[in-house]
Image (cartoon, rainbow, N blue to C red; front, side, top):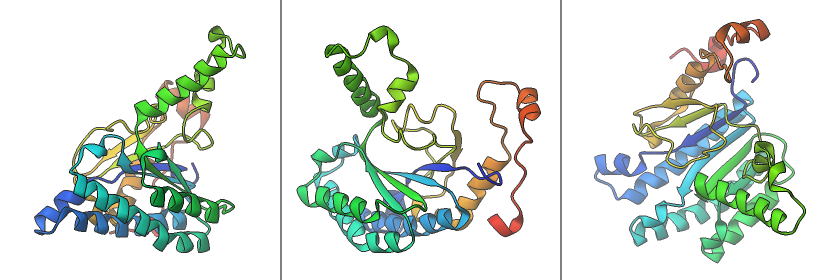
Length: 256
């Protein structure tokens, strides 16, 4: 953390469909509004110097949705990548997509690869999109890779450590999320980054994702700065090690 801010924020962007329903619009209109909102939150993270932003765009369970909605979501994903990649690149943002992308249409797989390649050398904010991702899938794939090493005789099962498993997970090159945000009123993590969220601070809000603006994001950050993260230690130990994070000045997070 720097100035009390998280290095890594992870978000479940929930509420697009309900936002559209309340306005008597098709669900895809809510998803389009949600994509527009991503741009604002990415910009705010870059402005504040947050290093990683991980967004849950499409879970491995979302294939259960109506086929028409899934198809429209795939098309929207391709369109968003094509429209935004140059803007991300010009602002020094590195894009990374995690999840099992082989299930996606070839057009989308190519768009992902192209966007990642264009932004690969950027050193500003890293924007991670979790698509066809699930925490259980992530851990299972990591276990399979370790099991293959055991099968080949290069690894003794007795030598496996949590650190070794973690090295096989998605986001193994990023710090664990400091702050998790879920919009839309639900209070669960829905198979998202199960391993990585072990000590993450959780923030739930009733605000639907298309309405989760800069002000709402700043409220979540303010809530985070007021918490004491103990990581299994006592509060007294933490206070001895370092000063607790102070509230951020108004010029950083606004006063409204």
